[in-house]
Amino acid sequence: MAVCARLCGVGPSRGCRRRQQRRGPAEAAAADSEPDTDPEEERIEAGAAALAGAGGGRSAGPSSPPRCSLLELPPELLVEIFASLPGTDLPSLAQVCTKFRRILHTDTIWRRRCREEYGVCENLRKLEITGVSCRDVYAKLLHRYRHILGLWQPDIGPYGGLLNVVVDGLFIIGWMYLPPHDPHVDDPMRFKPLFRIHLTERKSATVECMYGHRGPHNGHVQIVKKDEFSTKCNQTDHHRMSGGRQEEFRTWLREEWGRTLEDIFHEHMQELILMKFIYTSQYDNCLTYRRIYLPPIHPDDLIRPGLFKGTYGSHGLEIVMLSFHGKHARGTKITGDPNIPAGQQTVEIDLRHRIHLPDIESLRDFNELSRLVLEVREQVRQEQRQEGGPEDAEGLGRQSPQPCAEPPTEQAEGPGDGGAEAAAEPPAQSGQGQPFVLPVGVSSRNEDYPRTCRMCFYGTGLIAGHGFTSPERTPGVFVLFDEDRFGFIWLELKSFSLYSRVQAAFRNADAPSPQAFEEMLKNIQSLAS
Image (tube, rainbow, N blue to C red; front, side, top):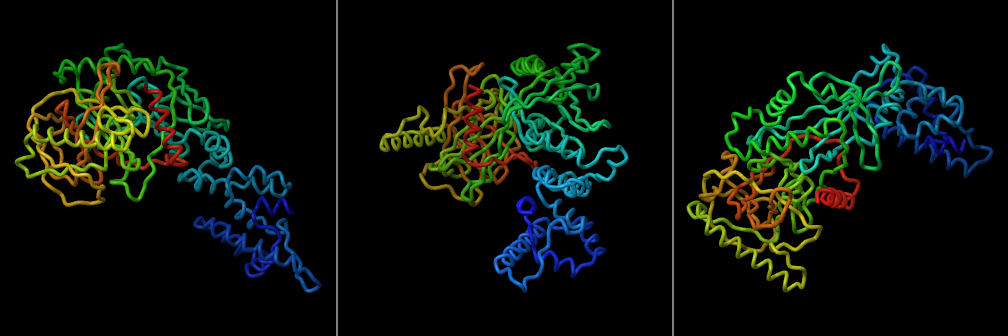
């Protein structure tokens, strides 16, 4: 029975007998059937009973009451106890004895494990109609594919992407998250299914590819190694359209950009769009995904870190991850483009050097803003020389591998922003809003940016030529508008990027440790390089 005690967390217990005496079999069965039973409360009670039993063992004597074996408990109470244990422990528990193995075939146990461990909210009792048990769902679907749940970045060359694999009812579905149509950065994310996994009537898991417009078809999922898996379509003819490549391109363009090629008058943008279609369509039959984590949250973070949608000129909207690293904040690309690929850093903010904006009229002078920002850059370089640390060409000391950013490429007349006054001081968690307007001559894809900001900091962004050639970090201004929006002024490009938070809840996306998150950033950046 020592084995039983270790597996169940109960053991011999006088408390067990007392509870049985206080409750009759009917009351115990009713308690077992209550869906709102707290598993933690059950474990606490069981632990207390075990301690009581252990104490009784030490003072065993003629007056000691007889011990209660776990095997003597009524089956309905054992069901409740077993249902509170992690599902991964139950197979070992089934090897203890025949009674335990028989009880562990009770669907109530596995229904609760599906709900508590994987969030399955469907009425699992309906499975009885198809002959599939909750135990089958847990063992052959949820537990088997648990390693692919969470956030992933597909390996699609410089473009990357964001895949969220979730339990959706009685399916595991891989949803590709897409930014809203350019330039509506505040609109919600779009998403489409790439694959799904479910149980068939034969109680075996089947993988279906959801790509294309002809419905689900045969696919395959392979877990390559830890934090990496791949998908393959076995019927790529389902991806083709009757109108050939032209119809496929027109359909893709409406989904990707929400418009037709005739609506896009900028020739350079047309070239970029056509290039992306040709490149990404090569990956419609096989894809490899690498796990990504959401940034850890610290009490002194300027704002809550996470995923943001940002405007990038002719490249449209892209997804960026904002994270905080001591005195610096970094924006890492989750989706990218031929200039700066996914995985590279798009901006880095020096939180030690805050920039105070002057009155609204002075804000319109780009030359004044440029002068003040360059003064801050020189100040940062001097501090680095005094500290004896490596001097970054753009004035930011490196604490990680060289990052990158992506330049907006369209030029259009925009409103103005102007001078600033630099001061080295720690970032504040909140501040009074002050008027903000872009400098005259600075272009913006989205003219509907906030007209008040909370604070500004010195930062740098990486620009590069096509194919990530001649990458160069250039100075700029990080503008914090509120908890969910920020911007970046690229001085050399005379361009402005607006970022808006991705308002979505992601499960299974937290890093197991800060070190794991840092390692993930290094890995995706090295792959992009």
